[in-house]
Amino acid sequence: MSLALLALLAACGDLPQPYRGRPGGQAAVLAIPLAIRLAVPPPEQALLGNAQAKEFAAALVTALQSEDVPVIASATPLPLDWLVEITAERQGQGRREAVRPRFRLLDADRKPQATTEGKPVPLEDWANADRTLFDQVARENGPKLTQLLLQVEAARKSTDPASLTAGPPRMYMVGVQGAPGDGNTSLAARMKEQLGGQGFVVQDSAEGAAYGLQADVAVVPGATGAVQRVEIIWIVSRRDGEELGRVVQMNEVPTGRLNRLWGDIAYVAANEAADGVKTVVANALQVPATTPDGPKPTGPAVGAVPPPPPAATPTPPPVLPPLR
Image 1 (cartoon, rainbow, N blue to C red):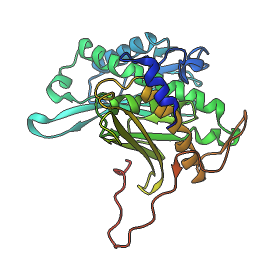
Image 2 (image 1 turned 45 degrees about the vertical axis):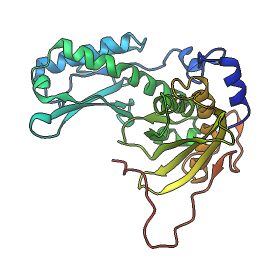
Image 3 (image 1 turned 180 degrees about the vertical axis):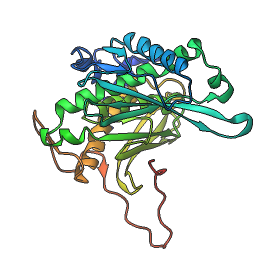
């Protein structure tokens, strides 16, 4: 992290302004109409009856249309339509048994492009679900599907043409932990946006993801009582759990500044770390290190460090939770 972070602190005062004069990577994408149409067929694997399945598809279409996504509900989509495939699975036992809906984006060749999942719904509520419940689930997941769709579109436009058949690289955002205030949520959200602009599709489900990303945050006393030192470590792993590298950020902030809203601080941290995360993946030879706009540096990014050497003991180092 650079001195720009402290400059932002002085400029923003107590009211974070995360996007003032800086709309983020999604802004340019949102200004361009999507060149595809989605179709949502009634789900056959969602533990619903035929009538309920049609209601669920209609509810999701309404939610996506409110996000300005071109979408229809159809059991017979056209050949060039992309699909939103809805499934659901039972989880838990006894009184805690629930149903978790899942949503998968399929391109015109019916190849998976991104996946997300909804919150668990009590089994009894799901069995008796009506349009009210479906509308609630659709409103919760419509924005997530829209963001994934925009990321896929942006990634496909920026990816090396030779790699388009494989689709854009997908990364599972495992999460951020250890941050005070709303730091865990804000850092994860801003990093998703930044990596989306770097050609990745960042999803909150492990299904189909080639990489995993998590961050550990520590806020410790600084050199004086007036400041605290913030340490953020972004850990990039491969699907099999092997750690590929880390991006380390450190800086000092006024004591207590991060106890509530992170605001611009989360934006700056994610903006600077995203380049390092992409470099770690590029160095693993899984994504191209160049874009159509010109060559990108292939050396280590600022803050990017290689994985730590193996421990002297035979005990294996901890890894991220396995990606399903």
